Length: 439
Image 1 (cartoon, rainbow, N blue to C red):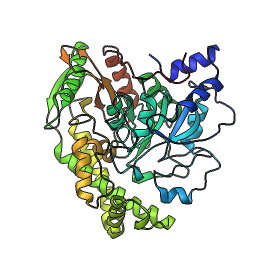
Image 2: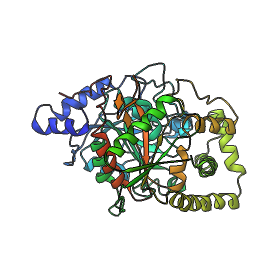
Image 3: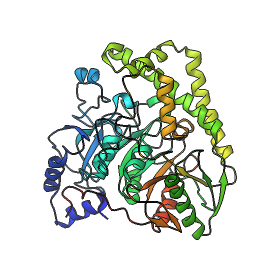
């Protein structure tokens, strides 16, 4: 399996050079509409586990020196002044040996689960998801082995599921978002990476997470299977395949109903926080509604109409949801579920030119049911790709099905370890493109 770890090993052994791999990545950067900006790379390379591996930042979230994101917005691009220093997160990425050289495509302000016009490397009729769709296309399509991603309502996990990748939405606060980001989206958003293997995601988490983060005790003795109503057969088959593997480890598997009430509350919180954030952000920069897409302008108007009391209520709701998730998980250690209801959305599935915010957010909820719950409640959620026949379940051909495994807040490393056990019994994913520069 080609991944960032094996690419770093090839660089360390002298089989390839870091400069040669970077040249190959830069040459591949025009694929799929995934990359929106490429810059000349300079400076020393960190000695960490990914030494010399090319890396792409997302055009939304924390930034690298000389590569400030503009959230897919022409209005912000006109105002951009690139930061002189890495954010805390990118300083840690760089210390791990990753070499940032560009930014990946996002829908404006991350407000969709597609990243048009970026296309899916598995099938150009389909989207790579959103809002980290450019990152997902870059990794699945071999531009890079690993890429920065963010998740405020499924934006790591949906692209992972759309492109057959591994993606972890970490526990709230586990990964730094400063100094410029601070309490980004009131803690709704988390940042990490998209990659082809669990070992890459685990190594990235170890490299950038706060020293106290991710080590909560995790027994992995009982797991719940949760399938939202109306999920397509292939999505259900992916979950059943993982459940079958877990039973083989003598882990008890039970079925639970989808926590619809918690999920609905989480979706309301996500919409409210995103609206308030956009209103404050655009107000600070002096951006008018006429300069941004209609759906963003409509959401900004909602934020401007919000009272301080309503915003405070959202912060209370996040705390209530955190406690509610802990209560709901009583008796189990992890929860497995589909990421997507009907499979990978097509390019153009989200209309950024509309004004109906409620319909737009309902569409996101229909594509990825319950995705915002991990963000509003703050717990870790990991997506693994499942393909082929596993434990008697036929998952299907084509793009692997993304299955989410979630746990309580703070259980990131235990979650990764459980997923690594599962992955050992899953068929290896064969990606449609080799990683650029990989021998």
